[in-house]
Image 1 (tube, rainbow, N blue to C red):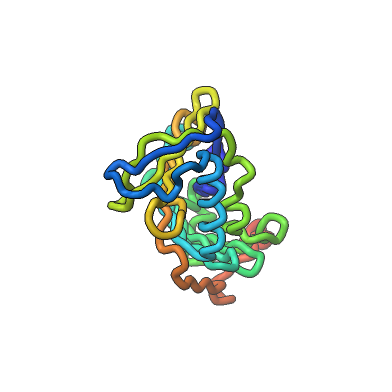
Image 2: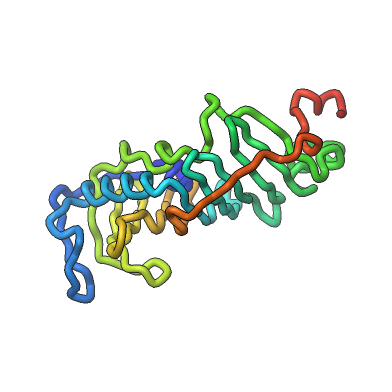
Length: 232
């Protein structure tokens, strides 16, 4: 997603604006965000989601017209594990733990990356690479960063999976990003939708605060990418 990609992921952010927007919940119950600007609501959601530590994110994004599914669980440390890909391009399991990222794809995934010989070499094996800057790719500080959550407008409330949500939008040119924030309980982000961008998509966030454990793959299943050229 172009806006605040990591909150997206995937997620994942914003522009075009109303300061001091207020709203009422659709069923007449007290609005926990009464009197708050849309930007302030987003700021509260950013903090609450980050403070939860762990969470699950699931969604779909498009690049060059090709839809790709993804689902990850994220630990408080920023370590995470999940899957991503499509039936057309292949799918891969991803682990990010201890400053390294491990990928294990199906044949179609590796064939798209390096051809049939690469797919055969990597069948059932993990490729290890250092995470960029040695930083966990699912770091909550990046995932729920509020630096781009500015100049938002509050729209009519909605529901996400049966949960009531405040709806915040940002428009920038032809791109619209919509954030759904829980109206009941802690103000977590529930969903982010991006439309009209180069990489449109939707990400759902659930299971905040649930324990997540991520372990590196067994050493005998790991391949160093530097050895691939040597065919080992």
